[in-house]
Image 1 (cartoon, one colour):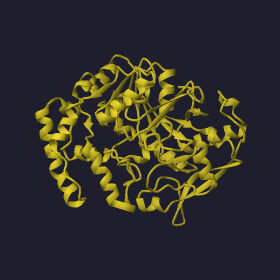
Image 2 (tube, one colour):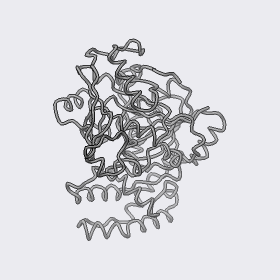
Image 3 (tube, one colour):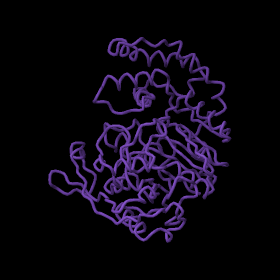
Image 4 (cartoon, one colour):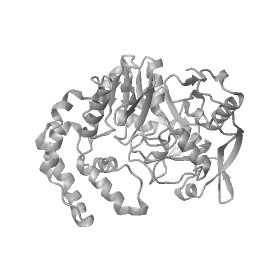
Length: 428
């Protein structure tokens, strides 16, 4: 049975939760695994008109029958984890089967403090982080002063690790940012308070996932953030602190690359991004405002308004290349229902030269201007369509053109937020 990856092919917020939920309900999915990021992610799933939001948890938690796993590549805030579990429980979602990697790193309260004061210190040069401690937690991991989930159950080791982490952090807080130093004992007390509830969830998730694949189980790896936010392959430095591309899934889930069967890139019928950084097709006019309003482009986790622009086929081709995409899932086609003519970026112009692939340097990308081709709109409501043939002719033409330009076949198309508002174009 297959190992399937679902990941974002733009700057995030593409509708990965909808694609995950669809796969989990149409295929016999045994495990749904998160492998990177933290509670800075946000997925929205609409089932029978009821809206569910996940942040740290895999969105597959909404689907009955699938065991959900938080892998070793995720950074975990225990406080955020239990808050999210409690909220879903209140909504009637069963969460008892959740498993958390013993090797996942912990976001402590001081990580969030460092994140927020650093962003304020940078002023107009800020990265645009969520302020939730994701970057500082990953920095501690790389600097080998991080805390792992397993450390919470050994107070002696936990105390030693917190002391090591705060030795330099407190100097930074007090001498650079003029903030009060953080007490080691307070951090240890907070983290150990989560131990009893956390202990039954903790497992060797790499072993579990590999054994599941050996037993012909189907494992769905759910991406957080997206290709253009990857710390190596995204628009650095305006990126996240992990590798949400397909290769990062193997590292963050503890599996080898030869185990992967499908890699699905989720992409919007237009483009959005949150936070700072270059965005070639960004709109500052009435079209941009309309995309934001009609698309409901507000971050699930942050509440920040998303910047909006037209579909960028250069980015789509880049996502196909760096992820080895086997297919795309196109979302929010219905948002474009009212446009008479729809531009699509097919290339960039940089210093008078036409460029059809992702520019090599930050400087080049910053100066890239979109080269557009235009497609006739359909100006009718497509939210009730359930087959590709039911779409208006101009909508079919638009989808086929995007597929041709993007470098991989389109598996499905979303025509609304609901689970049932999905058209399968190329069945797998």
